[in-house]
Image (cartoon, rainbow, N blue to C red; front, side, top):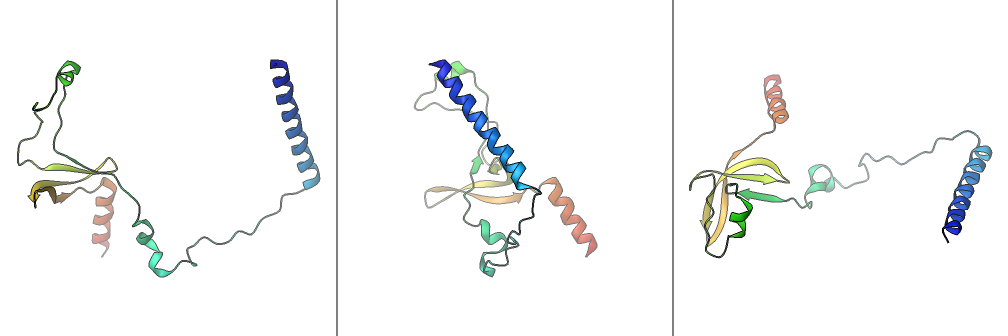
Length: 138
Protein backbone atom coordinates (compact mmCIF):
# COMPACT_ATOMS: atom_id res chain seq x y z
CA UNK A 1 0.00 0.00 0.00
CA UNK A 2 2.83 2.38 0.87
CA UNK A 3 4.57 1.41 -2.37
CA UNK A 4 1.45 2.33 -4.36
CA UNK A 5 1.23 5.72 -2.66
CA UNK A 6 4.92 6.33 -3.34
CA UNK A 7 4.48 5.36 -7.00
CA UNK A 8 1.49 7.74 -7.38
CA UNK A 9 3.50 10.58 -5.84
CA UNK A 10 6.43 9.89 -8.18
CA UNK A 11 4.08 9.81 -11.18
CA UNK A 12 2.57 13.14 -10.13
CA UNK A 13 6.02 14.74 -9.79
CA UNK A 14 7.04 13.31 -13.16
CA UNK A 15 3.89 14.73 -14.77
CA UNK A 16 4.58 18.15 -13.29
CA UNK A 17 8.18 18.07 -14.48
CA UNK A 18 7.11 17.18 -18.02
CA UNK A 19 4.51 19.96 -17.98
CA UNK A 20 7.12 22.50 -16.92
CA UNK A 21 9.60 21.34 -19.56
CA UNK A 22 6.94 21.65 -22.24
CA UNK A 23 6.00 25.13 -21.07
CA UNK A 24 9.55 26.45 -21.22
CA UNK A 25 10.45 24.69 -24.46
CA UNK A 26 7.39 25.81 -26.40
CA UNK A 27 6.84 29.13 -24.65
CA UNK A 28 10.00 30.89 -25.81
CA UNK A 29 10.65 34.36 -24.39
CA UNK A 30 8.37 35.83 -21.73
CA UNK A 31 6.07 38.59 -22.96
CA UNK A 32 4.86 41.55 -20.90
CA UNK A 33 1.22 41.68 -19.89
CA UNK A 34 -0.72 44.94 -19.78
CA UNK A 35 -2.49 45.20 -16.41
CA UNK A 36 -5.18 47.72 -15.57
CA UNK A 37 -4.18 50.72 -13.48
CA UNK A 38 -5.08 50.52 -9.79
CA UNK A 39 -4.75 54.22 -8.98
CA UNK A 40 -8.33 54.51 -7.75
CA UNK A 41 -9.42 56.57 -10.77
CA UNK A 42 -12.48 54.38 -11.24
CA UNK A 43 -13.73 54.90 -7.68
CA UNK A 44 -16.27 57.58 -6.84
CA UNK A 45 -14.88 60.55 -4.91
CA UNK A 46 -16.90 59.54 -1.83
CA UNK A 47 -14.97 56.25 -1.53
CA UNK A 48 -11.42 57.58 -1.87
CA UNK A 49 -9.00 58.15 0.99
CA UNK A 50 -9.91 57.35 4.57
CA UNK A 51 -13.51 56.58 3.56
CA UNK A 52 -12.28 53.18 2.35
CA UNK A 53 -11.51 52.25 5.97
CA UNK A 54 -14.57 53.54 7.82
CA UNK A 55 -16.25 50.12 8.04
CA UNK A 56 -13.17 48.28 9.41
CA UNK A 57 -13.72 46.85 12.91
CA UNK A 58 -11.11 47.71 15.53
CA UNK A 59 -10.58 46.13 18.93
CA UNK A 60 -10.86 48.88 21.58
CA UNK A 61 -9.78 48.07 25.14
CA UNK A 62 -10.01 50.30 28.23
CA UNK A 63 -7.61 49.21 30.98
CA UNK A 64 -8.49 50.17 34.55
CA UNK A 65 -5.31 48.68 35.99
CA UNK A 66 -3.16 45.58 36.33
CA UNK A 67 -1.97 43.19 38.98
CA UNK A 68 0.09 40.01 39.30
CA UNK A 69 -1.28 37.01 41.13
CA UNK A 70 -0.11 33.51 41.96
CA UNK A 71 -2.03 30.66 40.40
CA UNK A 72 -3.21 29.52 43.83
CA UNK A 73 -4.68 33.00 44.46
CA UNK A 74 -6.46 32.99 41.10
CA UNK A 75 -7.90 29.55 41.85
CA UNK A 76 -9.29 30.89 45.15
CA UNK A 77 -11.17 33.74 43.43
CA UNK A 78 -14.89 33.48 43.73
CA UNK A 79 -18.02 35.58 43.78
CA UNK A 80 -17.45 38.65 45.93
CA UNK A 81 -13.63 38.44 45.77
CA UNK A 82 -11.79 41.77 45.50
CA UNK A 83 -8.71 42.12 43.27
CA UNK A 84 -6.48 45.10 44.03
CA UNK A 85 -5.12 46.91 40.96
CA UNK A 86 -2.01 49.04 40.54
CA UNK A 87 -4.01 52.27 40.05
CA UNK A 88 -5.97 54.40 42.47
CA UNK A 89 -9.58 55.50 42.04
CA UNK A 90 -9.54 58.62 39.89
CA UNK A 91 -6.28 57.74 38.11
CA UNK A 92 -6.47 57.95 34.31
CA UNK A 93 -7.31 54.76 32.44
CA UNK A 94 -5.37 53.58 29.39
CA UNK A 95 -7.12 53.26 26.03
CA UNK A 96 -5.83 50.75 23.48
CA UNK A 97 -6.86 50.23 19.85
CA UNK A 98 -5.70 46.91 18.40
CA UNK A 99 -3.25 46.54 21.32
CA UNK A 100 -1.68 49.96 20.61
CA UNK A 101 -1.79 52.50 23.45
CA UNK A 102 -3.45 55.57 21.89
CA UNK A 103 -4.94 57.63 24.72
CA UNK A 104 -5.68 58.16 28.41
CA UNK A 105 -8.99 59.13 29.92
CA UNK A 106 -11.21 59.23 32.97
CA UNK A 107 -14.03 56.87 33.88
CA UNK A 108 -17.50 58.43 34.06
CA UNK A 109 -21.00 57.11 34.63
CA UNK A 110 -23.67 58.27 32.20
CA UNK A 111 -27.24 56.92 32.45
CA UNK A 112 -26.03 54.00 34.61
CA UNK A 113 -23.40 53.04 31.98
CA UNK A 114 -19.66 53.32 32.35
CA UNK A 115 -17.98 55.54 29.76
CA UNK A 116 -14.58 57.13 29.29
CA UNK A 117 -13.77 60.76 28.54
CA UNK A 118 -10.52 61.05 26.55
CA UNK A 119 -8.19 63.54 28.23
CA UNK A 120 -4.93 62.87 26.38
CA UNK A 121 -4.14 61.44 22.94
CA UNK A 122 -0.78 59.68 22.80
CA UNK A 123 1.09 60.30 19.58
CA UNK A 124 3.50 57.75 18.14
CA UNK A 125 7.17 58.85 18.04
CA UNK A 126 7.21 59.19 14.24
CA UNK A 127 3.90 61.05 14.14
CA UNK A 128 5.03 63.74 16.58
CA UNK A 129 8.23 64.35 14.61
CA UNK A 130 6.27 64.64 11.35
CA UNK A 131 3.87 67.15 12.94
CA UNK A 132 6.76 69.27 14.23
CA UNK A 133 8.47 69.23 10.84
CA UNK A 134 5.25 70.26 9.10
CA UNK A 135 4.68 73.16 11.50
CA UNK A 136 8.25 74.46 11.18
CA UNK A 137 8.05 74.34 7.37
CA UNK A 138 4.83 76.36 7.30
